[in-house]
Image 1 (tube, rainbow, N blue to C red):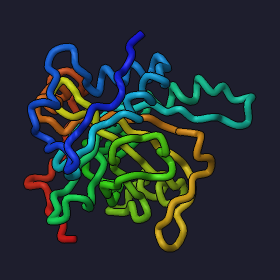
Image 2 (image 1 turned 180 degrees about the vertical axis):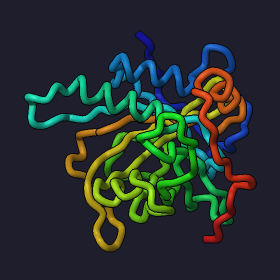
Image 3 (image 1 turned 120 degrees about the vertical axis):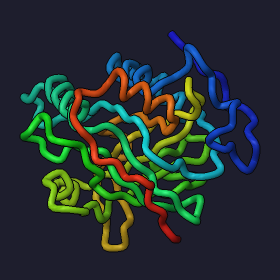
Length: 250
């Protein structure tokens, strides 16, 4: 079983995304290695990585490859929790490819979209940028009290872009994502957790249960990760790409 060292002494200002020291090369973490760890329920190892992440000096920017699993605590208990999580994880794997973070004149705040299939009924429907979120780089967050690095939050208070069913679901089933960066094969990889809860009228999120993570996801913004995704992990469905990536003024 892998073990992880105590957090290194990182620069006070945080690392640049393209700092070569964050690229471990062969044998390093990819989103697909992390996915396998989650599928094997190696959650303590993932938590150790999450709690000992890298201090970054800015939000990531651009398109990223993404994977993830559901970790719902299902009630009522006569519904098989394992079956539900496996179905939702498989469903997400077929309908979600990652995220897009917009560039911004504020390195700690921006917006983004999810790379989602435009129809859950048509298995060959194209992927489009949808389900809007705002994102911030924060020094800490109460839902991640043991995290020693800064972290990124993704807030879904206003997810609507076009009338996609997935986005309307997000207006009813409120969620918050929190992710941290760790060293990876191609450069920094983000390890994320998702909570269900409720946004108030001011956009403040309160988790239903701070101790219950309903999903874990993994993102890699490095071009080599996107290349690996294109060559080895796609099903042939087309995708609408934002080119250039939008810029947000904050």
